[in-house]
Length: 352
Image (tube, rainbow, N blue to C red):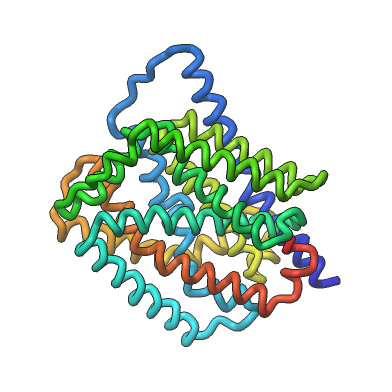
C-alpha cells in the first residue's frame, strides 16, 4: 500500500511540475507563432531577444536542474546520502567533464557532434522516465522504449534543423568558432539531406506510436505530446524553441523526478503543495548553481570572450555540454538504482 501511495505521489508530482506547465507554455508559443505566420506580420525584435530563454535557463530550472546531482543517486536507490557518495559524484564530474572539456579544445567539431548526440539521448531519456512515472503501460518492449527515446530526443535536436537550417548552422558554427575552427559540413544543410532526414524521422515517429498503440490515456498523452512538439519545433524559431524547451519541458520533468525521490520534498508537496516542494529542492540546488555560474564567468574572462550575444550563448552551451556528460552518467546511475533498489518503481509507476 505504501509503495502504491508513493507511486501515486510520483505521478501527481510529474503531472503538476513536469507536465502541465510545459504543455501550457509550449502550446501557447505554438499557437502564437502560427498566428504570427498566418497574419504575415514581421516582428522587429532586438538582436538579443531570441537568446532570452537560454539566458533565463542560467537561473530558471535549466542550469539548476543538474545542481542536485550529488544527492540524487542515493535518493533514487532509497539509500542514505553519504559523503562518500557525494564525493563519487563530484569525482565523476571532474573526470568526465574535464575529459570532455579537453576534447572540445582538441577536436571541437567532433565534440559538437557528440553534444548533439548526447543531448538527443538525454532528452529522450528524460521523457521516457516521465512516461514511466505517470504509470504509462504502452511502452512495454525494449524496441518501443528505444524508439520513443529516439523520437522524443530527436524532436528538439533534429526538427529545428529541418525547418531552420541557417539558424541551426549559425549556432553550431559559433560553438566551434570559439576554438578557432570551422564546421565544414555543408552537405548537412542541403535540402536533399534534410528531406531525407525528415522522412526517416517522420517514419520513426509514426512507426513508434503505431507499435505502442493502446486505447488508453497513456498512449493518447504520448501521441498528443509528440504531435505538439513536432508542430512546436517546426513553427517556433529554434533559439527560442530550444531555450524554452530546456527550461520548462526537460528541466521541469527532471525536477519533478528529484522531488519524487526526496522524502522531504514529497512530504512538502502533500502538505503544502508544489511551491513548498520546489522551494526545498531549489535551496539544495543553490550552492552548486552558484559554483557553476562563477566557473562559467571565470572561463569567459580567461578566454577573453566579448559581449556579443551569439558568442556568449555559444560559450554557455559549450559549458553546458561539458556538464551534460557527467549529468547523463548520474541520471543513468539513477535509472539503474531505481530499477534495482526501489520496489515501488515497478508497482504502478513504471510501464516496463
